[in-house]
Length: 195
Image (cartoon, rainbow, N blue to C red; front, side, top):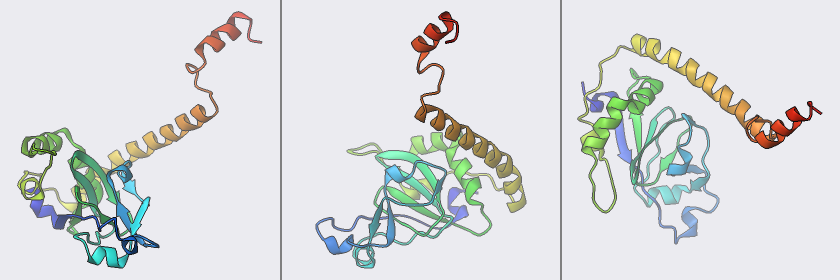
């Protein structure tokens, strides 16, 4: 089985001309850029385009629960869209078949194996790029829907715990409560008897 067997459609987006404000002003279509691909799930966008901007570019509406993958310049950022979106060039929208869990593909594409395969097929010119026609040939395991769930559930649980720890760490940072942030001060307090 190859990567091509897991999706219905996979294509890069496109950027409407930035010199035409009518392609962006009061736009309602989320327009995804690489810096939006920071987390496992993509719930929002910083930028938007209009219907006119969409129709006048190679951007397309990528359905909810699709894989969003950066394949140009910055290669390998990945998220699962939780809303219909459009993307700029250099970002693939991968609409999955119904028999494929988005989380399964997320973990597959995050694996060392997949990253090595992508590195092997990456073209190096003015800008590094990995093309979907080459990605489509990467061998992937043929896993039933039920087995995908069994593989994904423990990984999702770990991700949720990590996210919880990251939130706690951020709170500690906000209130300057990390013990090593004020190490000198903490040592001073300990030497003074804790006062």
